[in-house]
Length: 102
View 1 (tube, helix red, strand yellow):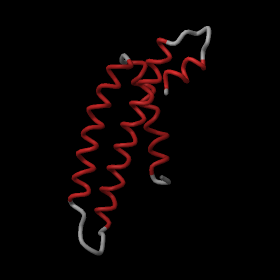
View 2: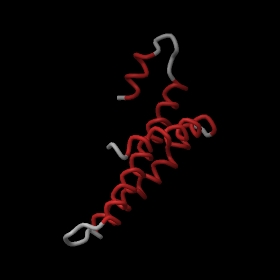
View 3: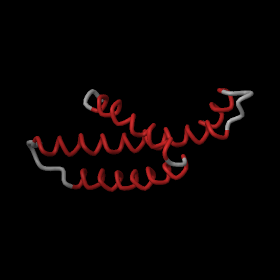
């Protein structure tokens, strides 16, 4: 998590930027496809697990897979939040947004 946090902060900027450039559900669909690719990448990461001792390159692969998967999760969350903000009734505000998020 300590390695992931700086990447998540810096890459979160792009997730917010993309949610204003594209429609939220289109962005969510793209991120969903990329997250499926991240799941395949995770399976490959498990399949190539080396025998003892675990080399440094494998740890870098695990870190890269985790950052990629977490970034796609963030893009999906930002996109669906942007969609909910677009359809929410401003009269009841945050209550409705909380209901949509669940």
